Picture 1 (cartoon, helix red, strand yellow):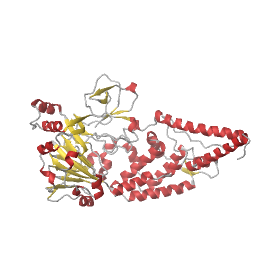
Picture 2 (cartoon, one colour):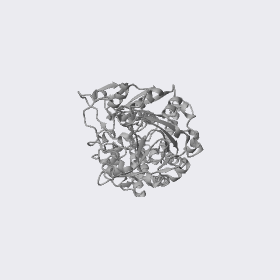
Picture 3 (cartoon, helix red, strand yellow):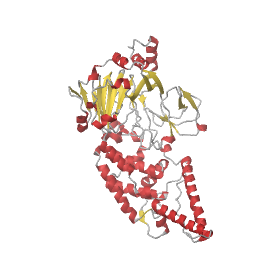
Picture 4 (spheres, helix red, strand yellow):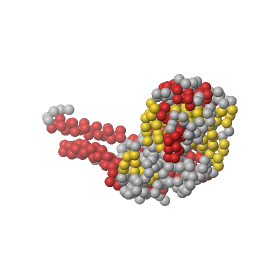
Length: 556
């Protein structure tokens, strides 16, 4: 996969050219439509591009091991989950292993399939539009999404191998010459559900079976999923055709150069499996990773544990079934981590949030014995700095909100000053301007903090560490890094996260800390909480009401 920067160009890239485009204003890039999809023209070199020729099936990996099949063992998702390691089961005796393409055509006859993907690329890639940096990434989707009848899709899959009796000779030749690829990944069509029995062995629990997270996957040869991980347990059944699956243990995460958590591709690797660019700083150790390779054929079942990285290549026209079971403990811990109100969530002022967050992260690194946590996080953003810088549009929205609140406070203050002495209103400290370094230290003294703030931070830290230590060691470091990204984006804004990390943790020497003195204006302003401010604001309103009543000659 390649990332490119949009620019005004004279040449046009070919249809379905793969990549992402940096966010830019309409006047700085040219657009045109290919089969109803937006795309960019560009000649600037991609930020991530294939480094020379493809390396073959193992793609410059340091070492690969073969996952040996286990014969005659029945599918038991609960037992596979307990073992918590990849397993390839062959000759399982599960009923659908006797299917044929003719049988699938008969069952799906007349069914309309939504979301069929056609492409000339080899990647099946779906970004997460909910990611914090999504507004700053202009998607360039290298595929066409269509609605097809099942018969048409099955004919195309047959043509891709040159064996379909329903496809014309011209269709078979054009398919092979154009390197066209097709994929359908969606919930199981109703017409097929009754045939996929028995269901109980495929799910870890009865609750998972009730939820029924099951997906059908039809694909043509050459289609490959981008290297990624999932947080659910996956029992992968190969019903027809063959596929090759390459897996990596969660211990290999940093070697696989994952995208940052705030990026739309946050659970995917930045390396193109077939031709990784090892010159990218985040991918410099990719060639040292150790992978596990499994080739699945009709009737095989492959168990993929959570957080195991994997890429799936279709070797022949293929029909697969993915059955997902949730990892309840993981969701419980993550919901607790992200649903808790930390100190910076309760502070009123923007600069105070930054000071509290810096103190929390520093204590977390010390307690978790992870001194390289922030250095590794900065490496993840190497080459993506343009996506994590302050945006004028985001600052404008913040300023409009702040101005409205300041206007209300100022009107109240003026009214009080006319009738009685008023105290100064606490106002937000301004956010850093575009192009300016993030102010991690308030002045030459360093980063301020207060005594009660330290007590609260220690409490927050104990709760976070309890959740992190409840997770497997193999994924703990990765989850901790992701929480830092989420905390920073929530407290300071996603576009200012990188500046904050660089200023507070990348600068040498790093600013020291100092305790503010209670009773001073600095202390009172910095550590005002939202609850205290709301009470203070309510008292203003009450005093203003008294003044109005007195002015009208009434008694309160």
